[in-house]
Image 1: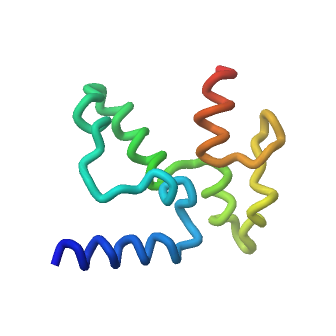
Image 2 (image 1 turned 135 degrees about the vertical axis):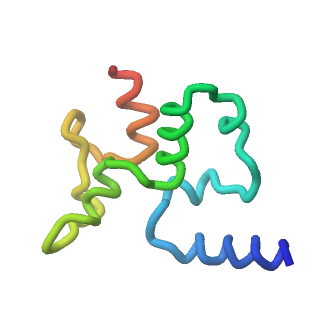
Length: 96
């Protein structure tokens, strides 16, 4: 039963247009950072980043009303490139 659930979970994940970052790091197991990070705000932020529950333009752009911002126009206000999770972690965090 567990194998069937995990297979269905992977299938739904691969068909989703959301959570592009999560697709690259997804695994159906307890993640070590949940046990090793003792600061709850950091743990919560890492979890939100993993599951795309954040306010980066890659996600906020899809919520824009009345029309979502096109994917390629969800740019960072600092560097003027696509603002996704990779950009935030690898570029912006080093600038701060």
